Length: 226
Image (cartoon, rainbow, N blue to C red):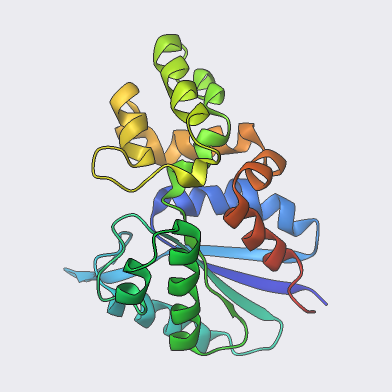
């Protein structure tokens, strides 16, 4: 039986990543993906999407989509950043006490799953943000920023200091995106297009191998009961 898998994501970068990298892979398994950014409100009659500034907006959007598609062959998941996660997120205070980032994110995902309370829902929070994935193969930045060889080498050096890209922390100046923008300022304006391209060039097998938590999420998506 075919599966419809709905992704509620943080922003345009993640939406493009799902559509260009995850969609072809999952389609080969007869899992058809649909992605949209978190709905944050309406301004002058225009729906606003993208960015997570409080949990209520995230839950409202997840709940609305779950109600829209109540069939058993539908699945739902998230792709939200641990970095700058809203403090009203379920499990936030408990997770804050955990020193290990993998345990921290598991506490948050479990709390999110319990709060949404739907067996078709697979909660996922990215350690520490989407750009963590790009440190699985920072040399691929050369394709998008060909005149920045020195900067790319520095990003490779940063990656080499961590046992996993997911360990690159969530400091205001040392988070993955901040590290990249510090070396490649042009990335700030191009992240929604360049980021997914770089991730696609790294390739899903490499991303899964070097980013354990991400890999476990993909395993769960692939093995969702039919």
